[in-house]
Amino acid sequence: MENPPHGRRFTGILFIIIISIFFALISFISCIVAEFKRNKKEDLRWNGRLCFMPSSPAFGFGIAALVSLFLAQIIGNSTFLRNSCSGGKRNVSFKIPVIAKVLLLISWLSFGVAVIMLISATSMSRKQPYGEGWLNGECYIVKGGTYVGSAMLILLALASCTTGSFLCTVKTTQVEENHKVHAQMG
Image (cartoon, rainbow, N blue to C red; front, side, top):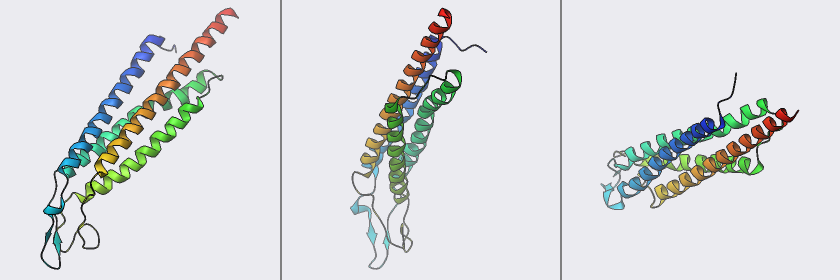
């Protein structure tokens, strides 16, 4: 089975990277909006013994940010994994650049921390009824900057993932071209 021409293959990879960027930007924007829509201290109601926190619009934006972030990370890393897994089978001389491996690690670490922050902040944005609260019957308010911090980690994950995928794609293309040149000469 023949491989598609490099131009078509590169266009397909570029399209996947653009889709990943699109979902990451949706996640980023959702985080920024959630930061402005989160509950404030004034929203907390206290009856002397028990607290109540109404639901916040940040909950919906947090869910949108999480879903978009998962899609961006999976789609963005699929390019990297496709190149690294199939590249070695097609051509033994293909090696994943070290910088691409480091960028992939950074991408997954920032993704993990962003997910933890978003899950915590989003769950705190739900309604916290009297006597139940968020944790052990106590009400919690999302600290200012939590969603913005998640947004910055999303940008870091996006940048490292797309850069690593791009570097790996360029390296795969160069190895394939060198292999074809050597095959034609031999």
